[in-house]
Image (cartoon, rainbow, N blue to C red; front, side):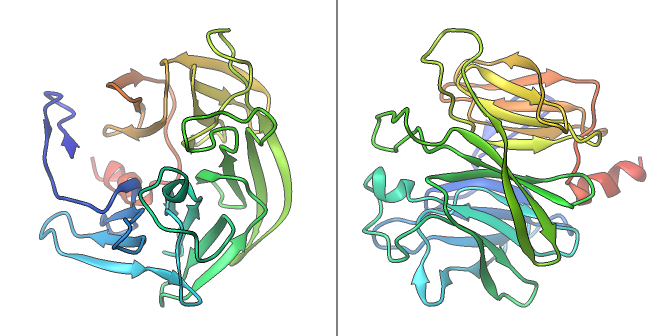
Length: 269
C-alpha cells in the first residue's frame, strides 16, 4: 500500500508474499523484505517505482531458504543488510526453518549473500549510524511470535562496529522497557532509525523511545503499540509511525540519517 503525505489517502500498490520491512536504495528503488509463504521462498526484492518492474536480489543463503526476512537497510556502498528471524515459522505461515538459526545478512552489489551476525533470538530492526561506523540491531526475543511473551528472552538494542563488510565488538546499546506502566515492564524494541545527530529511535509497545548516541534514554513519543517508523518530508523531519490500527504523523526538529536517495533530493530543493 502507499499513503499520500498530503491527503492521507491510502491506496493499493501491489500484491506481495507477506512483505515486511522496506527502504529506498541509493537510486530510489524500493527494497522489500518478502517473508514468503509455505509455497514461496522468502526473498529480498527491488522495485522500480516508476515502471513497477521488480527483481529478486537474494532468496537463499548457501542454498538454504531464508526464515522470514524482516527489515532492511542499504549502505552507501549499495550493499543490502537485512534481518531474518523465524517469525514465519512461529506464526505458521512458513514451513520449518532450513537454516535453523536467526541471522543478519549482507548482500553485495554482485549478489553474494554473507551471514554477518548470529546469536539472536529474534533479530528485527536495523539501522546504521550517520557515519556508518556502527550498526544497531534490535532483538525482539520477548515476542515469541505465537501470541505469547517470554520475559526471559532478549529485549535489547545491540550495536556492532562496522569494519568494511563485517561486524565486530557486539554489545548491548540499551535494554528496552515499557516506560508508561501500561504493560509489563519488559519491552519489545521493533523498528529502529537514527537521526543526523546520532540519536537512536526504536518502536516499542508504549511508543517511540529516543536514546542518545551513548544509549541514554532521552524521552518517549507516545504511540500505543508502535511497531515501526520512518522519516518523510522534504527535510526528513516528519516521523510516520505505524501500529496495528493506524498510521500516525509526528513533526520533529531533527533530520533522519541513512536515506541517501532522499537526502540527495533534499539538496536539490
